Picture 1 (cartoon, rainbow, N blue to C red):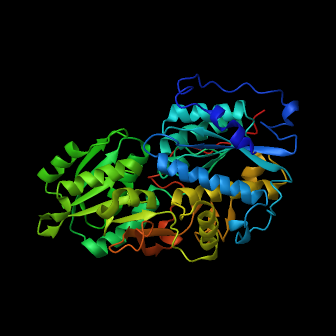
Picture 2: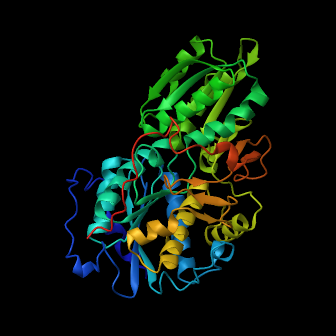
Picture 3: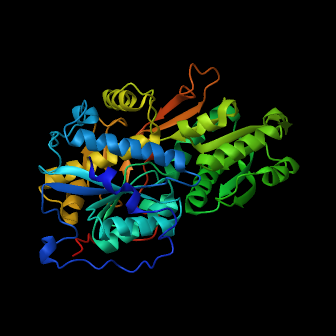
Length: 448
């Protein structure tokens, strides 16, 4: 039985430690940790999987955990190996990490920053996790990344799309594989212009936390640059489930496009309310009213059902891609679970392998050695084409997918179609771009 199965219920009881003090953990002596926090001394190494098991992003969290469990199997030489067979780096061989069997513990972020920090703290302090990964919220990612920097462990971010994660809140011990808000805006704008024209009036409903803020900024700047006018912008609580009261002002405005800067259950509910209010049937300013969802996922499309048909958005990855890495991952995941993986599952699986590979190439679990191995690392075979982990901000740069809801889906999973693979050059920005400016990586921290 895996360590994850033995300890999962004990890692974090939902809400039990969310209000606990968040002072830095008290570690054993540095000598006992061979110079860095939680250095593994036996035949195993423990990873911490911190995902939303409750709250509005719980569907993503469940799929992330499935992907992590699959990654552990592959790292330990079980199953068909998945992307280990297609990854351009050949350092991993299915014998664990540096010969140590991979075990894991889990926590529930609840999609709350305090709860996520508390669960990460518990996994580091009580369970000896040498790396923390996961999450489906940028607020959570920023909070846990800061904790990991302080504690001296590596943080491999899960699904986090805000510019801030690798912008003003970047940290030397943190790395993000997922794309960001700027990239969504840069990829979407040309497609929206081609399909809806450059003379549009947009109204934004935006989740009231840092992901929502940076996504609204990115989409507004990219669409205004091509001629659109922003006529309204309203923040909505992350806990909101009924968006009816937010839709009425849209009807009363002269907007002919609604941009839903919502994710997960929020997007499912807000889109459903918008359709119920007849927005998609309206003609405004002589134009068919349109809805845009900047960040899409298959899980969201499934939740929203027929309402997503024809609606444009962007995504980090999609299971229908036909490159060898994607096919290998879809095959492994589908065999184990009976359905295709989401983009959340993909990015978390990849992050687990990228961490293990960096340790293997560095010949050490020490965080600073891992940082050195990942900075400027170029790789392929992981489902997104050629990818770079940029040294300046620890952000991955790769192609971005623009998708739309499929008009005639062939199954409950065939809900999105790829309309454009935006080349990485179109979504790449300078490290000091205004949308990501501020903050400093600082220096890596080995902790104890």
